Length: 255
Image 1 (spheres, rainbow, N blue to C red):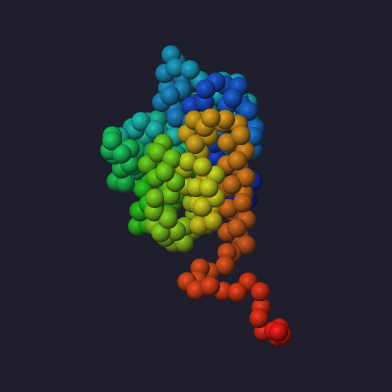
Image 2 (cartoon, rainbow, N blue to C red; image 1 turned 30 degrees about the horizontal axis):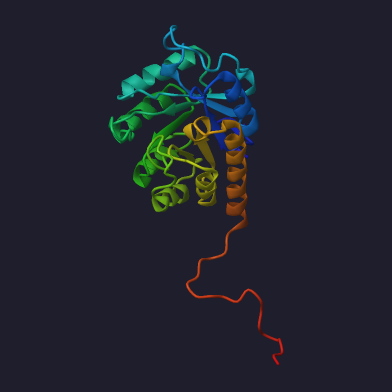
């Protein structure tokens, strides 16, 4: 079980919405993933603009924790305003604070992210900031009072997997709030790797919605995440640099 603020979750897969080919495939992928948390960009829904489609129109949100994000924000004030739109619409159980600082790499702005988190925490939100693999920032945000840290695996939508496993491991080991790996996961192998490093959960969107078979990929990601978590809890053998016999030789007679 993972606890994020007041929320207790059995599934460690958080699923993004709105990028699937159609609502039927999205619904099947949601079921296959067994997720309990649905994420979405407020600015891409009719919560923000009534002329936009609502990708969750056919989903019974009462069965899920709703987790809107502030995608599109470039300043702390924009992120706060987007969060309040979702809150006023009644679909803001938690908020993913996403403030982009560079249009080419889509990497998050650490200063504006910190400021947005500070304001939203003061307003009583359950706050989960999206950050680069910066252990110092992660610690500062934890000290501020955020409820989870969401470091990227690699830049958004690249599917490159974990670019910096060492820094990700630093964040996992040095913080005492849940660590949810977000962005850049491409396959169940990547998700399993993140979980083996000790991550508490994975947020997935493009890796599932843009797969050739999103429903099968949703199930594959679920299994990869579960396997990675079990492996982390089991404790892998240490890496060695010389061969070690897999069968004992002591006490065995030789001809």
